[in-house]
Image (cartoon, rainbow, N blue to C red):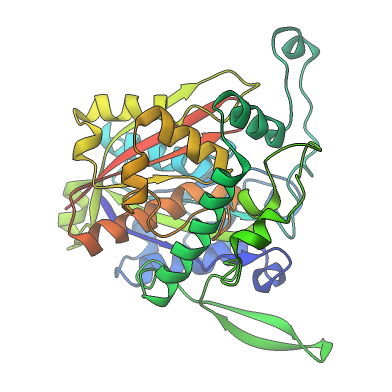
Length: 386
């Protein structure tokens, strides 16, 4: 059961959240999660925490450190998971699996990525030369370009998806659609007129959304990865800071504690795909999750596909035949990674929180969330509102 799902507001690169550590941000998020549900942290058995760049402030098993930073009892265990962009969807999978298997009854799943403070790639990973004997490994932006080429996607199509993401996110903020999922964060930020003076600030609204952007402004942006390319900063996910958390419980534990679950995990799907194209596995992962749930796309009311790049969204819509559903507002109805940002290790839990809230708003039954993953994977989850 998904008892609750929350997230921090998302901070833009070098924005408000760049002044707080990821473990401290996460501590506020998980304390808000248990606090508003009246759960004693001592009841939590494990913290499953997603984080991609596990170095510096995000090193030393940040999942365990989140519980310690939050002041929870030492009995609360914690681990850190790296499935790249799908990390906190994988922690959802881990938490659900431990409950389904009967091993645990109350788990916090979630993640964090402070991309301003711990830059992507700063963990300096390397790959065996043997990998390159089998695969042409490139950076994700090149894969996004390859997808656009192979699926015949134009710059105009991708810019339209980027523009629509910002418009939908702005409407969602103005309409209060994120109010149930976003928990305000308290932190000290430098005063505008004096960097030496810190001011206590309550941060409560996503700040990466570009409300004033236009298709004309987007069309003027230069390609980001290759000179004649179609992928730009305007149709790619934003570098941001953020954290999100989900409270996962067995039915028995929820009943015992008097909790009222909002939804439940029905099924998951994971898949590996060609690591050169890398970002095109969402349709297959979704198909696996749907098959396991015994459902079809017609029965899914709301769909979240992570906006790593607009080309990923367009390829997903083309392969699934969901273009009309996107136009109708059933796919990414409240924006996504292009507008809100993609805080790598937190995004799986973030889109879970957003999906649950949207299912409630519509009084709909089923939702699906899916996300592509670096080096050729994808993960998907089917969620049912209860």
